Length: 441
Image: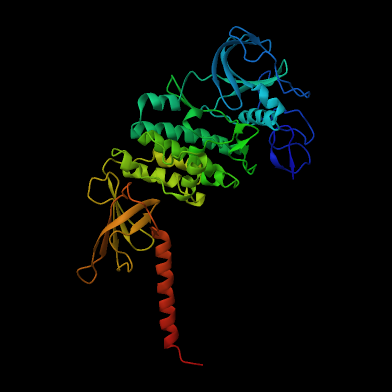
């Protein structure tokens, strides 16, 4: 397998054109994907650009003979972003210029090219549209839509926690943008409030694809060539373990953002990146409603599903997450449903009753006793009370409340796994009895 020199796509067979950017294995040209038309777009020169001696660009300067610099919007790990006026169509746009020090560091220019190539593949209202990319006076740059607004991190600092309805709306729209990226075969890998922009017109935008990868691409995580490849507080467990990431890694990170929107704090914090990583890998997140009482039970479960350590237990896609967030949930509704095990679950969505969960079971759950932590639908719930069946045909009742944040959770009983083990034991017992009835020989 080869790596495309144009855009850095890994897992490339080396035969024909790169499936990501259309370039060849030995080419230094990051050609635009032919399926994405970009009006009068420039392409990166074949000759390697070199750092510009002058450093930062001045207000009023005309860049690349077309873009009048009006202001600095921000500086990140990959480059500086300017607000510019396109002198040709007289429209404001965003200009991103690669940091000069990254030219001399392996992979810096390739990552910048890859960001532009990946951004060109996504067509969604919540992802800035790429207009042009190329080189000017030895610098690599690209031009995209300008989002008039503020980043979500700044807004959270100003406002504090969002209401559940506002948090759901923002998160669902970020999930929509992620779904479009995933549909284009791209994993963002750096979902965090800093990379979400709230437009003054009420729009929500996902930005900064600087460390994004194609699905099935590389596994680099924390740092390389001086560029941060992920923010520890928002990274999924598999990113810390250098496993290949997929769409569910972005779902995990978006779950962290949703947790923070609802509570005003992060689920995992530490003095060092290693300490934070250990918590992501080993510790269950606090229950949202232990920190924010007005959050409904269904929304807490959505967050818990996002933050599953095992990605197979998370939402399968960003589209699934968006659908779950938009599903109607009447306030204070108590949901009663029969489970595949034969148990009946009574879930109090609004926690208006004393119990978060009541399990009505046809038989006694031997081994279950008050104080036992049960992991049900991704939520840790301590068993408070077990009520025996009073007569033949009655059901046992097991009543649970949310797990107290101040208590350490150890060895929870997973409901699904416990049910499977009980079913297997029951089957073995029936088989043993049947064998005892059969004549010998």
